[in-house]
Length: 375
Image 1 (cartoon, rainbow, N blue to C red):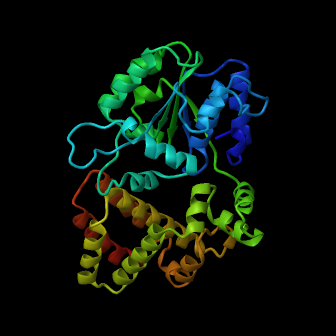
Image 2 (cartoon, rainbow, N blue to C red; image 1 turned 180 degrees about the horizontal axis):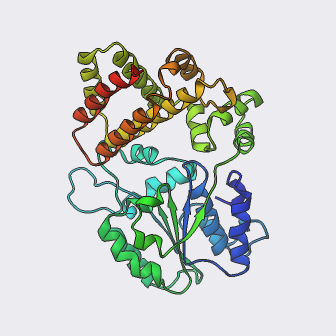
Image 3 (cartoon, rainbow, N blue to C red; image 1 turned 120 degrees about the vertical axis):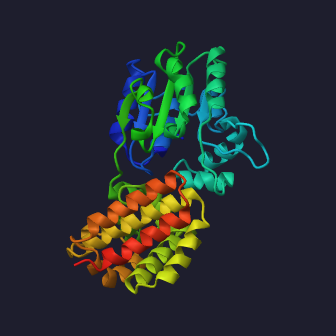
């Protein structure tokens, strides 16, 4: 991953390059922003540029030993940390090293992916991914030895918000006072859930959403027609990841839509028994899937509310969603939209806290019956 491979983000690229030129590389940088805007891609390109022995004014050289090692993500002085699960049948804690081959394969395929994508790769089922305390021990050990190539040592932490408390506390000192020529690059979707003492030791770097033109141009490079590229980019809400998901018409998105349609229709018809069956089906899925589904519901509620204002440029729905919303949107209005969103947030919080999923979704469905008919 080079800077040239990162979609858009020209201002961010220039700032990172300038920091290296002026030797102002921060010892702990927190890259944060929406999903799918290229945070991980930027972190890897930045790490490559820092380690490159013959960089140009705009990118890494691509020819030195460091760059050749980066091509396969096997640079010995660059360490990757990410959430993992415990493998079935094992009681021991796992670290990123146990999944490094799967990680390399996924990142080399495309650095634009979500936590859900990573969980699917790990075959996580219903397990919650974490960065365990074992990881902090590994990081400290790796940073205690001399650089293999004589340059910087870099730790890229993807989703530091997934570090458990013990791991976070153990890393505080090394993040605050790292060994010479050591850089921590943290890539976060939700910095508000990171331990405050970790946050205070990092320099925050906000990565902004992509423009529709930037997304459309990349889609055009992938062989789409201009019409399709522009339509998908418009619905992507500044996220290349969402554009990819729209393009691939993932099975998850189709399921989310089908379950959302079932929920609203059954709730409107007050079919309590069928809603109980609906909630039991949802409960059979893993927690990450359930959270993603609730996030999808929030998006649909938001878009259906905006749909009522007859401003097509502000509506981000695909063809099937628009067809459904033509009839459903009037039921989402100023009398109930805030309360529906509140119930969705509360359901997501309960799922995160591992409350019984059948109870969570059935309770939510019953409340939707009342809210859809609120006058």
